[in-house]
Image (tube, rainbow, N blue to C red; front, side, top):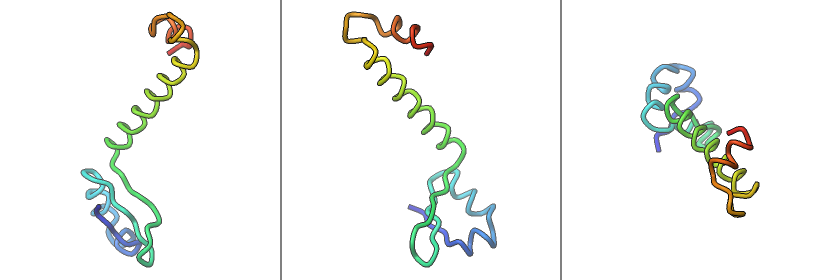
Length: 79
């Protein structure tokens, strides 16, 4: 994993942000990770994955196992 110090982030934020576009960057303060910086594309993919996972879990909970089609249950939930 790529790392950057808080000082590097303060001095040249554009450089650290550019690094994060391709791969997450761990932002360290006194050699301890304080945050992770990720690019827009990766963030959007992660959010979409989480939303899809939550939707599938909701459909399973409502009754897809009771012989109802996934589409019917999803429609009922407004998904």
